[in-house]
Amino acid sequence: MTNISANDIRQAAERIAPYTHRTPVLSSEWINRISGRQIHFKCENFQKAGAFKSRGACNVVFSLSDAQAEKGVATHSSGNHAAALARAASIRGFPAHIVMPENAPKIKIAAVKSYGGMIRFCKPTLQAREQTLLEVIAESGAMEIHPYNNEGIICGQATAAKELIESLDEKPDVILAPVGGGGLLSGTALSAHYFGEIPVIACEPKGANDAYNSFHSGKFVPSQNPKTIADGLLTSLGSITFPLIMKYVEDIVCIKEESIVKAMRLIWERMKIIVEPSSAVPLAAVLEEKIPKKYQKIAIILSGGNQDLNNLPW
Image (tube, rainbow, N blue to C red):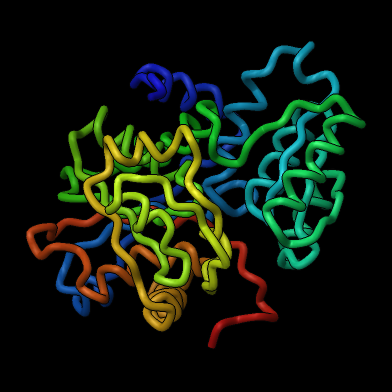
């Protein structure tokens, strides 16, 4: 079990402050009315590079010594982590080598290129991504920065929930976050534990329910052939994130695809903001009444807004 402390998260918040936004917390009277709850949304869709991933990437990149950073960083990612890492590396002035599946969303490929990331494409399987990354690291000598199974990444992601708790006049009854690899969820659960003793419930698509199965069986279950519109939530939990989730998360619930689309559209129409499908999963859980009624004051982390506008789900 990792031993990330409250102080590690505070230090991460200070480290990333010059390079990230302190994103707003918004609410919608209409969404409150139809859900029968009071919901506050932490808008990481307004974050640098369009997602919470900038927090973890900046925390790790600005923690590296000059010697560690000299040959750059490398990762495999289908999108938001890739763009966030490329941006953070470009600010520090060293290369970012990014392995991306050849079917990655065009908007996310364009974002990585715009931040100067050097992309190597591979087949869209985890095995191909990992093998190609090993080849890139062997050639370049770059340091691998895993998208979520990395303590520095988790500390950075934890800063979103820390800010959320600080921004609210009253402590929420529960915090909801989506779960893919578990970096955001682990960090959220740690901040909720350290800075408010607030329960955390994770929300996951039924078509990619490996975290749900892992949590409820108590044994790691890998993601196999996941099928969901929420392309940010396709990965398996990691060796660091899974134990943290088992210890600090209250529950994981699963959501239908049509509920994700409905929630996403509701946020676009009623809040006038762009979110990607992964962001809409927690609100979908509320609309499906998967969150216990005792939790009336709900805080949700909207994870990102990098949506391909030529490929909307409605």
